[in-house]
Image 1 (cartoon, helix red, strand yellow):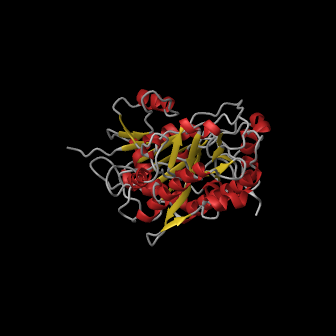
Image 2 (cartoon, one colour):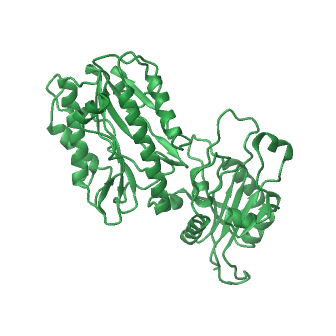
Image 3 (tube, rainbow, N blue to C red):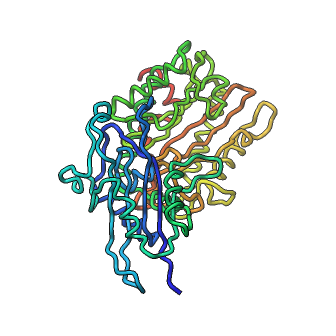
Length: 440
């Protein structure tokens, strides 16, 4: 029986970004080769045209960018691993082609000049072995498929969710009657879990800019300011440090809003005697930070606010102290779970107004991966190890007291297995927060 050679198809949407830090082309090529080897298959990434009229700046798909470093719309790439001759199929060398849409001079008056397949040195510019016009894609794909019965790995849409791959999947189904589709995302996710030195540098940039923005917010918060004034200040501060956007809508929640995890209206006026939870961070060159601090609006924690604050900070430190490279997990009920460590600490320290343990008010996990997405791709059943970047962010939210506290920092596991706090420059002790708010 002839062995089936799988075909991998990953279809994503892509578009133009502003200037950003770009890793060397060789980095993206190495990722493409690693994916081809991991899948043992051909990889096709394809995106439809970006709408000509767009009110918002387009953001590239994470997986497309991770494998290509490309930021322009309507591109596609085709990758085929080397294959030995077998039966009627000839040997095939490693192949990669970047397909570009035809130039549109009229549209470029609005968007600016675009790279074309006929641009001199296009392969050197993009880092691909070959660059071709989009119209060549069907012929090149057919050559690689040959007479094989393909298994197609693609960006399969999740149930109830739209996918940019649907249109291209329809094309493949119409032109290839016997195609079996599988999801390629787990293969890419496994590559993205461990960050290379370039990615770590970009994440440090995002964290540093976000921490600087939080410092500015600490010095600006005071009674009678609106939450959106602080949100605007944060975006200004990381924008002037070279970050293109927020990595998620800034959360600035004071009073009762401090107990609402994903409150993002940011419309209330901050009042003396309340706390404000500021969960906000920048995305720099496609890489996202995620930082949260809780501040007393008038610059001084009440005794009760400080009690809850110190418990949350203690829970974070307990998770940090418990971390073991190659053993610790972010989630789960085992002793290896940092969520369990934090929750056990909160349960053992302090009560609500009715004398009940506080762990019932810790209503989320202790952290998540960071990278190209603020909740980055990754397998949470895999122990944390070198090159992984994630948050540690315990919280207590007591609606009855209009009191919510979350403290969130970003961490990297170093090559030696030690935990590195990337956001260490930002104060987290209650006394240091109050001192910073006084401008000292």
